[in-house]
Length: 235
Image (cartoon, rainbow, N blue to C red; front, side):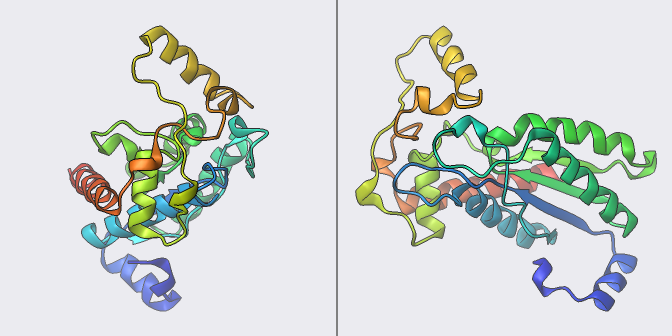
């Protein structure tokens, strides 16, 4: 159920009559190469949250569409500081708990948010009463087998499945780690998460190869993620 379908009197009655789970998607506003819109992370995580909500009967709140993205400097990004994001999550969580919504899922759609959301997880669990500590944090790519990327095959395929904004004629191969040593991959991973580090390892802003992306693969990835997330959320 989407929050846009809810009205105050009915919603308060619904909360009283049934234990509800709320999904809060978190995305970003940042470059995704020349072929994907800057809203890509938010677009994908919003779609996954919507499908998960319908599958499990959860309520989906509006997406937090800004994330921690300084690693993309000087490529375009509108970024929050890490402590700003976890404070936003903490404030939202206090408010939903006040409104008797005990079960909350924070669904992350951007790798750069991970550390901040880890801190937010600790903070929100501690601030909740012991009987109400049912808040879960997930990054959706942990629920798929294929290696993840940034504006590469996976993200481009999923965007093809949900959006008409993909410009495949502009798609170009970016950083490919296949064949590199484990030590070199670790070095690249570490560098890419530092402020301004991503362009140093992925010159065109792409991690992976989007040129072979298809709508069919995107549908498959989305179905796999939602299926595995639903199992986890209902376990």
